[in-house]
Length: 554
Image (cartoon, rainbow, N blue to C red):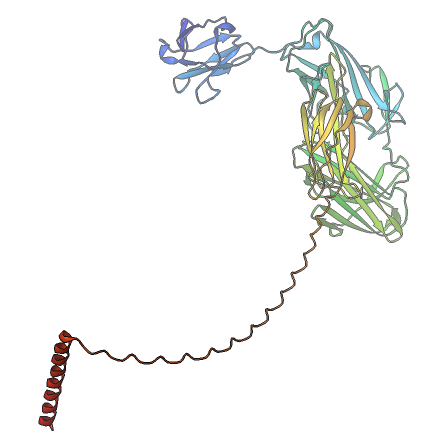
């Protein structure tokens, strides 16, 4: 252990001084080894405001432990050596005491434009709203890394059933903080991850909200405007007038999406109604499928008459089919024209896509087929300090150039900002769509880097702008042309066979040569005569012996 009376440690040949008032930053060299053999009396020492962490060589963060917001407890490493590493125990300031906040609740008008909610307004049960904050940090001085700001919003509203996180940018588009809204909380906490300099720092923050249906009643007034000085009323749910098929989706807690389907809001008689639901990419079913026959009362609230029997629901590889039979369903004289369906899916990519599509199809013997494709609500959240920079979602739709209904998977794109930097990469899924979320508002170039199989690469740079006016979502459609098939080469004509060679005439036999006259023998010379006689005498002797032997035998 370290002891407060100990003042010297040997660090790679350099002397380092420790004291109870902290470690001077210029005296500490990061990633240098300290030998505990130099410690004479190992004991415990508390160092105030320490901004470095001592860890062992195995990178175990067990040497320094925080004891309170301003002190750290330094312990001996197990392997008798330590490494100096950055460690910050100095807490950030709470900026709530110095910042000036103006908050406004917004709603969408008939044109989809956000306008302030006024006292006496009625907001439908499922209608979107948005909290906007204007922030003035003039009385806070410079904002430091680690500083925090907590903002409240009315408890009758909620942002999402799941934890929501979105970035805070400066006026140049650099991320300088993060905002977090936890489920069940009516607070948003901003933590600054970078220093923000200036004498007149201002900013804005906004995020979408809706009624917390578990804590409010339809028809009741709630004082949620301007810190409780104005009342608004919760209206009944707005039904899609004249729709045979309506579907919506929203993100909920646990990395899941909640999907809701409403069938036959027109109240038509439908024979052999069948509903088919198809899940989009990066999703899988994560709950039972709940389906009910019912009707809407005079307040436009759904009244259930009977559950759809589970035997009528058939699971498929990518969704489910419900055989609804004839509509209306009749029970005890009550006609249930409407069917409501709900279920949950899990985001298998952990929420990276940002947008998740599902489609639905309604068929019947006496109606035209009705089809819809929808995505989950894009719940906006944005903030900027020192400028007006928010974030949105950029989506690419890839299809065949000759057939827009033929959607293509496997196309890849780089998203490039004005500085020429690749800030995102998108790959299209089975539905031909790919997206990137939390992309700062601004101008970008979309460049295709890989074409779908069987298609030519589109090398054209596509310019796109992500802007607040697009409600946080911009979609660009990019076609691809099929690769021309290779034309086979015509085979060459075979070579004609050569004519056979005519046989040659046989050669006439030649006349036989006349025999030559035999050469007359020449008489032997003197020496030759003796040799001839000797040879003759030898032959006679042999013949004589042979004759004698032959006689004896006989």
